[in-house]
Picture 1 (tube, rainbow, N blue to C red):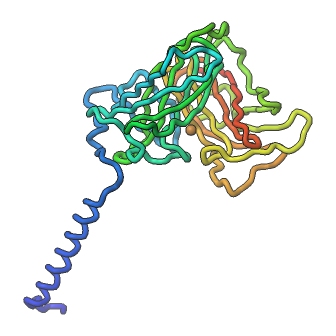
Picture 2 (cartoon, helix red, strand yellow):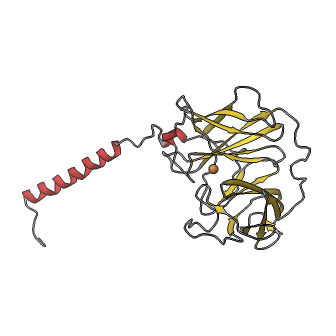
Picture 3 (cartoon, rainbow, N blue to C red):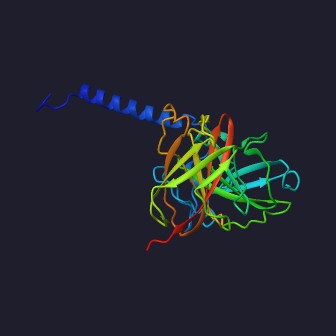
Length: 308
Ligand SMILES: [Cu+2]
């Protein structure tokens, strides 16, 4: 073919192939993806809009201070009370006013919506997963607050249309006596006991400094020794969630050990995490693990120092 002009029939073939490819492209684009929302539904104009998180470098997300393109509203049939189960209905609405249905959200860490619920003292932290309700766009969930006060609810989800993690928050007012312990007055500690197990969170170096990536090692043991029956929860053997005392946002961190088929040590399972906390102050990290089917949470209070 070199040095020769293309014949009419060859041109025709080239055009046929090109037209075929273009038609295929259009057909594939028009196939239903399951979601009726487009990435424009999640666009919000103006400054101070929430940034999407980079899962490789988990950062503290200032959810309260920034505007989310998604509104989270939670309603309860009656006034929620401390010590009683609260059955709540949740609606997520896009910036353009459309309700977000199950098919609009990706399954991330085995669920479509993760809710992080925490009381003003940060001593009552719960992680729950809403399920689709009866009406389109409605989700339901249940939790039992330990204290009275304004519980903050952070929703963590990923729209199919944007394929990026997104966050939204609201509050639920709970009747009852608030925790007499104020947030941040808890004694700093890298060890905790919960559910009959001992938990330790060991920083690779101290102090933890604002804006500097910290490596943390979580280990679980039995007080008298013995097997720790650790099972995966939400696609990981352990989860850490960090909160500041003002509950302005959170960091949700997963272990560097991502291979679930590699079973952790049965007597002292341990996992390493990396997190960067942008501002100095007192923080709590709640760990969450699944011990023989029981989800167990343990808190670690610590201080983040400013960079000298
Ligand atoms: Cu979750």
